[in-house]
Length: 376
Image 1: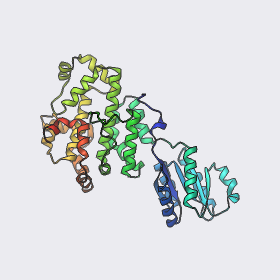
Image 2: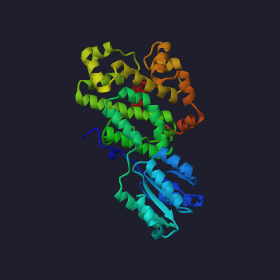
Image 3: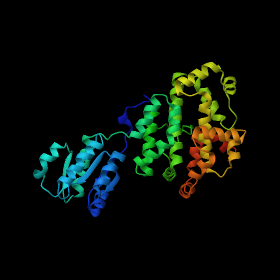
Image 4: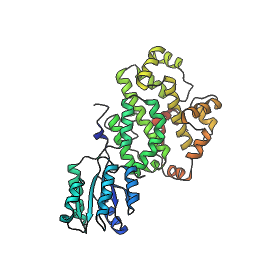
C-alpha cells in the first residue's frame, strides 16, 4: 500500500454550519442534521457578522443560511462566505417561493434551495443527495501533517505538533469522537489500515483510542499525533533502508537509558557515518535530535499521567543530570518544565485522566513499555 494517500483519503464527516436568526430553528436543524449519518455541526449562529468570521476560521464543507427579511441579506452573506471558504457548498433556506429568487441563487452559484418550513425528511433527502454528489474537503490540519511527512520534515513537525493539536481540536469543534475519527483517518493515510488485533506493536493497537475522554486534553492529542508521525517516519525509513529497523528497535527499547551514537553503532552493527547520513536524509534531523524528541515525548506523558518529580522523570528517560534534562526540554519545547506542568496539569486534565485507563496504551506507544514492566 502507498504510504502517502491522496488528500481525499483523509476526510472526516461533512462539517456543517447553520446561520439562522431564529434560535429555535437552529436547534431544530441541529437535531435533524444529527440524525443523518456523515454530517456534524461545527457552528451555529444567528449573527451574520459572526457567521462570516466563523466561516473564515472553521472552513466548513456545507452551510445552511436563512435568507431572512429582506431576503437579499442572506444571499449577501452567502456571497461573502463563498469567497471566504474555498469549496464551500451553500444551501439557502426561505419561506419565499424559489421562483422569486432563482436568478440570484444561480448568479451566486449556490448549491441548493430549501423551502421553509423544513421537514426532517426533506432535509435528510437533501443531505443524502449532497453526499452522493460532493466529496468533502480534507482536513487542512491533517493535510498539512501529510505534506510535512511526505517532505520528511520530522523536526519541523515535532515543533508544530502542539499548535496542530490545538487546531485539530478546534476543527472538530472539541468533539472527542470526531477527533478520534480524525486521528484514525490520519493513521490510515500515513501508515495503512489498522493491523490485525494480534499485532503486539503498541503503536499499532493504540488507535482508535478506547477512551475518548482523554482527547479533551490537548497534550494527549499532541502525543497521539507524535505516535502517528513517528511510526510513519520509521516505516518509511525502514522501507528505504532495512538496516534502520534494528536501530529503531534499539532506541525504542532503551529510551530509559542514556543513549548516544556510540551505543547505536556498537549494538546495531552500522557505521556512524552511514547512520548519520541516513537520518539526515529521512528525518532532516540528526540521530541525537530524534532520540531527544522521543525521550521528551515520553517525559511529557510521564508528567501528565503520573505524579513523578522532575528528578524522577529525568532519570526514567535516561537523563542522568536534572539540569541537562531541563536544558534539553527548554530547547525543544520552548518552555521550561515548570511552565509545561503549570499549563498541562489542570482540573479538566485530571478529570479526564481519572475517568480513563487508556493512557497506559499511550505510554506504551511512546516507548514506555520497559517502564511499565518495572511497575511504573
